[in-house]
Image (cartoon, rainbow, N blue to C red; front, side):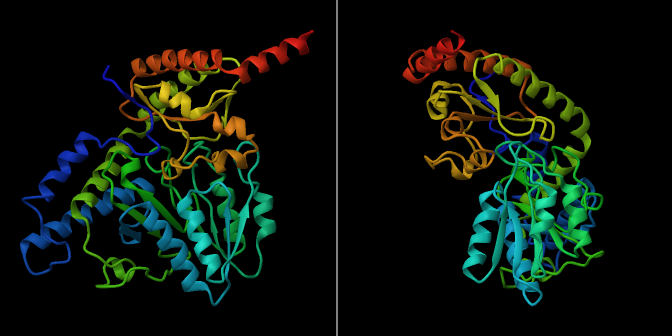
Length: 398
């Protein structure tokens, strides 16, 4: 076992060696611009991009022409939400989203509020799930888009996607889904799931950073969006800019590997997650945050009462974990996602997110169990709050 152990696969995944091997020729020997139509360098690059489209489309059951390459999920989210808002603002200005969405969605919606947009932020229950009836109640004649993520980046909670899609269809609304954490980890089928627009990023599924896609449905219904980047009309006019051919090739290969490995990988990662969860729940006053039934295979968000999460991470010198989203890791505020589930500031501050991935081993999980148990017990031994908690419990028993 090599140290440190990496258990922050929600923030980013290590690139699969097969992905890197596939990408390498497109940095040097096959360096052409996919938009160059007059020579073999451009044709080779274009052929590579077309092949990647096939690989990605197969993973999510889309048509190749429905994929728009972007610099990552954040750009895809902006393009989807702003693109729909600008294209359909003649119909209405109301968008429905959720309080536990990624900052890419929430900040985009806040930007639109400054431009006259009307945004409804749905609450979640204690499991982190939206209530479909509340979604239906929030719809108005001005509603044009529902934007709900597939799986949460902090808790791994999977939303009732098909129910949301049924509500969108019933009310003739578009449904955008940020599936960044879900694609490649659980089966995502844009047709059977009823999704009209969907964002994902290569670096969450063992591909390179700096490349992602936006799925835009072409029929039943045909979705139109306003471009957010002008200049050249690439990607059928929806996203101008020279394509990142090595990155796209890497995303394609990563998607292909996910298609091949998904069933066996899901079973193995779920086994490791459950083993870790069972062991850590043996520690007194420890709680799993979010649904334990509707969630991603490799995510465990867990709170150790009266243990500061930042102190615990510092104590785990040889284990890479996080206290929440990488995009908010500099904030001293408790996680807004966990607060939305009804957690107290104390429990939210004591939360740790562990993300298990393709390259983690059972030996690493055993090591993590040992080290986390030791660290939690040590931090509680020197905590006045923990001693008060213990004393109060003893008094209650008397």
